Length: 389
Image 1: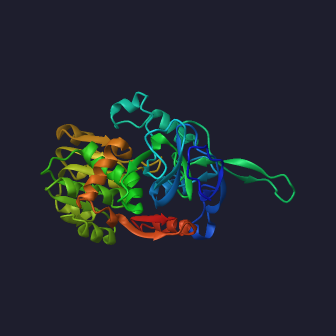
Image 2: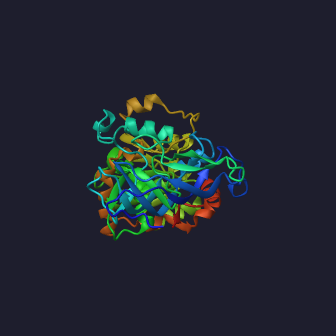
Image 3: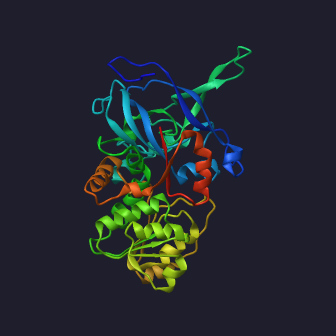
């Protein structure tokens, strides 16, 4: 099957992808198999859309949060959002990306027209958020379908399958809105390109767009998953100050040291040592981690929370400290990023050898191993696993 465009509109194609059938399945996922790899029908791209052959897709906690029910989404849904690939066909209204170009997918498109888009990344796009919640593309509707009914009895029909965050990257191919991709150089490895779209954009974006440390400022990163490790790498690349990494897991602290952290400590060790910094990024998505981040913030400093906790999570902080020490707390979604602006910046830092993003990748897996990969992610045994196609 070759879906490359030669100027004519391609027809539907058959793809393989990992579809989430139900939310809240029991662990281990390797046994309950909430994600099932199956054949689907993918419509051709609409006027403002692209057909992309996926090269690599990372497993992220945003995927896990749908599997375990912390983020309720409509099902069936083809999961995956942190991905990259090669364009095979473009819609009639796409004139700045061509077949053969490589692109990074981003999980929150920016329509460029709403009031939120005029905040330069501070607020997520309203239209993009609504489309994501509905399991649709930014232009509306779904391009994914699968057989339903009894084929043997002749009652088979096609049912829609929802898109995950406008991407659905756990598949051989995806149709996405042009505003959901950023072109990337041919020299960028597929795994590196994939993590640029979420881990780096979110973690690195939280550093440069929300925390905004100066070139000599100290930085603390709390929570060392993929987003936190990416934040650590970006902080190390941009400041000569002391960079402190904080996590409960010793294996992650060891990796943080290898990635350039000046200090790698447990939360208790950091607090007992009196660590304080003017820029603190919390990337764990847990209320206790948020509380730790606030306590590690220096007077006049900024605490950025970029992790997504459970909807019912509650944290306790002292409002008096915020007032008396002139502190700032900033929420940052997708790193307060404008993908078309920020991904090229991180790409160039990688190209200059200042951002060793390959170090974020714990290992590669096959699409058929996605449930086992979700188990490793849930158990904190991997920073970033990447599905290779």
